[in-house]
Length: 175
Length: 435
Picture 1 (cartoon, chains in turn purple, brown):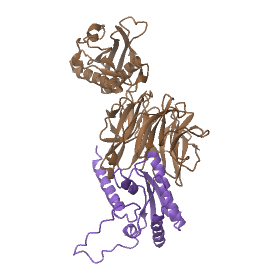
Picture 2: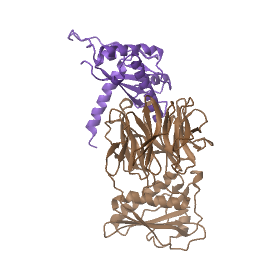
Picture 3: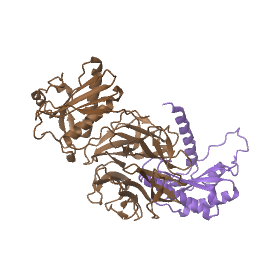
Picture 4: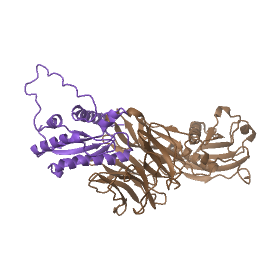
């Protein structure tokens, strides 16, 4: 049909979003391989290549946007509490930033149950941030159930990466 | 969008006296244990320009009946007699010689007004009697639909059950790699013909379901910031958000009378079941448990709803009255059980059983007894019933996110077949018989 070009655009956009979500997973609870070292900067790069404070990139790289959950669970794990504290502190520093928390599930659940489970997870992240002083009005939630995996293998390693809550900046960041 | 035109059926007078009881019958409760051999020659035509159409219609009827698993159409190359007049009795001996138990002799005629007349007679070859004779008038482009109507008539006459060939499937068409999956709302005929895409794929859509007239689809869409249940009117192409809920709504299903939609509303992380009256738009909350309550499905009399809940610690199947009273768990088998769907016959509930990473389709009686698994693969989920309650479709996902396909299976567990779709597909929902 005539929608092929818009479909391609959609695919490219999704790829960009997913790359963003994958690359900076610093606090994974599982034994995923460590993130690859960044490539050396080209010689001709400008000296001011550091990440702008208060930007989306700053949040992802220096704070961490993702927490992970155990199978069928939605409580915040102890080793993710630090990430959420850093998110809350960063949001206190940049009070115009607004977030949507995405809740995701792995493939081991039926579609409709996983939508409900993803909502529980997104809400758990939201509540943790609110408990640390972030105004609830700055936080939206959305569940993607099992519809947006970042890892495709049917293995515990992949499933643990897919069971996640991702804080996505939707407005108010520096650019 | 709507292209079903009126088809009228008339009964043809029987040519031979009816026997006291027709010998030709199939017991549908046995699945395809012994498919009935049936001969369906290409339909004849006085006008050579209609010959291809006659062959096409017969081909669709053969494919329909073969797909049911209850019939086995005989290869036309084996035929001894050539039918050249459907208004005289065939030479039964020449059909017995190839072991045909039934014979469908048909004819297509283009009428002066441009309509197509399709007439057929179903013969009991061993009983040497006419079992059925009908004619249909329609626009020539509706030839596939007439073929399905003929298939339904034959199926019903021989099995005693309503057919399901003149139905449609609404489903999610999938494309693109696993990490950039594109999902589009689509409909097609029950045999996979005439697929039509209803959305462009620029936003996620899930879990579509037909209303009882097959003109309206309820589905979940991510077109706006918050995902919600929407209605899609096939006649007008119009889409509208169902209700004005502040949070995510999902998992919609129409009541059997089409006047209500049961759905799940998430609020503060908790999911509960609500029902909306489509005329008054009044909303009634049916569950209040702090656990996940989702996936509602009405009984065919509209008085009960089956749903899934993890209030007992694991996801299991429950039943309640349509006003929310009398909630009780019915699944006590192994593993976790969800996506319950009430059979249109009222006798069974189909569901998805989850044991570790293994998902299969099963059926149980509506009190939870008699659990029986009918598929066995890596990941089957989300059953939907044919309107006669004898066949199910479901989504089969390959491991490692290698894609989803739609399969059908007899409620006995026999005759598992892949349903042909344009590319990958998931979330099928069967329409009622088209009126």
